[in-house]
Length: 343
Image 1 (cartoon, rainbow, N blue to C red):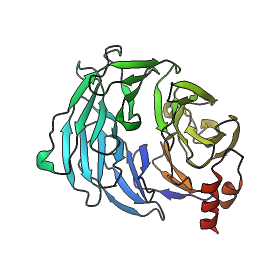
Image 2 (spheres, rainbow, N blue to C red):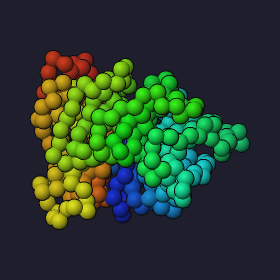
Image 3 (cartoon, rainbow, N blue to C red):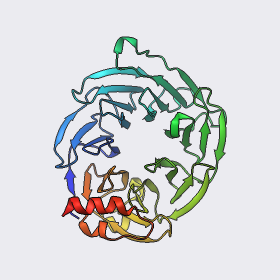
């Protein structure tokens, strides 16, 4: 499994994300230039120029028409994907740490850090493709009373049908909120350190988290019980669920400031594969020379992409043997279709 190694960023990667069809790959890093790539061949399509600091987060809408980004320059920006044109720049009270479109792409949420005495906030904006009708003021904006003023919201995501908003913070607490008021409907204290990632499965019935406490947890979002605990020997910066197999992919590594060598073995910089039901670690992929900060699985389950502290993006396509390896729990119809395509 030889990856494409994409070199387009000058600083550590902060997020990589596929569009819904999987033909486009978006990336952002601690430089100020979000970048668009073709997934098939790794060709760099273009960049989105306008941020003046680290870009922490990005998310394309369901039609790949608009892209939202959030950065340390205290703005959440909306771009036209095809042209790279800046559609809107929305000022926030602090650096924007996480942003995500709601289902239907009619609104989006962004979480900003505490700054100059102001606490961390979540803002929800209504979106319309007509710039003249889009307000630069959020529909709803709230902070979390139980979150200390100096603590950050690290991740924000929507539940199915936009019923609730889920936040993760530096203390390892996951909260379920009413989107309009911010009222905490439920509080989950399973992690003990910073939440690094929160990713849904394809059907949005399960959520996987990764945290600095070296744990990745799989939740049933019907009642928010923990279905499985995956333990690592290093912080889990990123985790994702395969759409076609009962597999979980996790990545991370020893904190960059603690690493005294570039050896991937010493720093534990590999991407690990676990069986989602049995919890068994059955494989790993190495290559990065620094902690893996972000990963994304292709929507078809045909591969995955990682971005790391070394500034490189690695786009992997699974070998034919991967699709032939299955258990009775896998989606066999999807696997057979993929096997036919790869012949």
